[in-house]
Length: 402
Ligand SMILES: [Zn+2]
Image 1: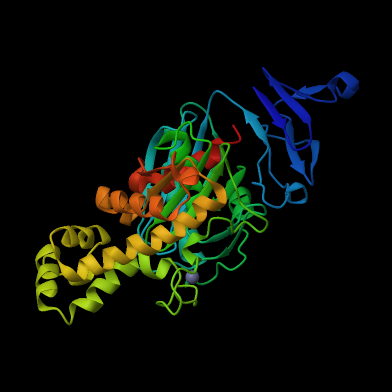
Image 2: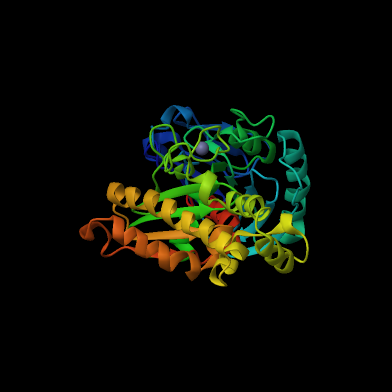
């Protein structure tokens, strides 16, 4: 097994029970594995004798993080052990922890959904219990947990491991989640936005295998996006690349979760579709009856997929809403196609559950709006990982340094 710090071109090898550092040939010598802690601090590999400590790499590469690049935990070449993925959603509906092997196969899954938008204290307390359950000693027969990946449903500064904000949730602004978890678990940790993580997962394990330039669009409660260029997430200068929910598509349009107006998210997210349907149905008794029928008299539970189905069945109100989704999502995606020229657009999240009812007209709309040369090889597809994309994405984040 080799521990290698790719950021600093220094290398440390674990050969049997002996740790060799890159300075070995220069006379640094070797030390026993159980008597050393290998840590990367401020871009320098350091060795320090420590009783009872297994070899570990603790990531603190803040100084080495470059704009637009993913912060890494240092490369680790290992054949045995596990990784942990953590999913934290902005709505509270999806909090989960997964234990996976080094092939990315999920072995244990713990879920604790919440009915409300969670503050930091609630989530971190919840995580303690979930991690203890997923990482119980009898689940770790093949070794220890080597990395933790976290997919967060909010704005994330992936270069510094900091959550910038979770809309409408308390205590998350500029919260250093990556360092917090790495210190608490004593395991290197890497965090990213959930759409970026899901994008990575779809390219490695799902619909986008083998694709070079991919746009992943998460059409959930909000709208997020992730761009994968040559197998890596493109983050931009301050890690906000892909925040396509806030593209302005309709002047003086409905209010967005960010406070702006006419943003894509305010028209085409699952929440926007359901809310608009419920709001408009008040004036249309036939639509109200159809909602009543399809939701078992729980109108507030109507899903975006159900709105698409009602539109296909001929409901006029649903058709109007679905047409708006195709129009404005089509405009946004056509603009992005001209900018980054992807080979594939992968649609995920609840709205994508509508399948061909969403995709077929959307692909036609994009073709209409794009230069033929920009869209002739473009495929618009439904994600293959479905509602698991975020947690698989968290696992994928953890695996990318192994
Ligand atoms: Zn917005």
